[in-house]
Image (tube, rainbow, N blue to C red):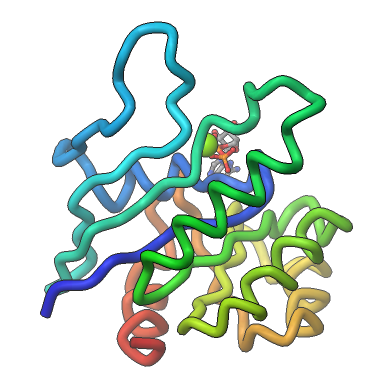
Length: 163
Ligand code: GDP
Ligand code: MG
């Protein structure tokens, strides 16, 4: 089975860290010219026995502030439209922000399979941010730590179920 996953969420939730974790060294940069903002990275991800194309919606953090919202929206929507499943990330330590809720609304609207991922969950009990996340209407949050490589088997299970 060949499928595509988009990693989506507001800046700083850990999308690129999770991308790197899934892709390892198998990265293929799409927009790698000097001076061009690297908006989007694509690679071959692996999780357990699943191999897939993974899209990191990256780089818009560096966009000019006046165009930030529009670029984020366009890039996220393009990636989601190409994806068979979406990993929607929130930061379990920060709790939900208005921007998380705005992204969640866009994710719900696209109507694709979604796994709600509460990143930065290492070494702690589920925080209030995780309980709040149930209210997003995107199912049960899966706690992971992209940085420490924790929760990946739960992510695998959730992804299999979503596909
Ligand atoms: P992005 O903007 O969503 O792509 O987020 P990044 O992947 O660039 O990560 C943003 C910040 O969160 C960085 O400082 C990462 O080191 C940190 N980070 C990412 N994953 C984790 C995690 O699992 N736990 C903790 N504590 N920090 C993380
Ligand atoms: Mg990033």
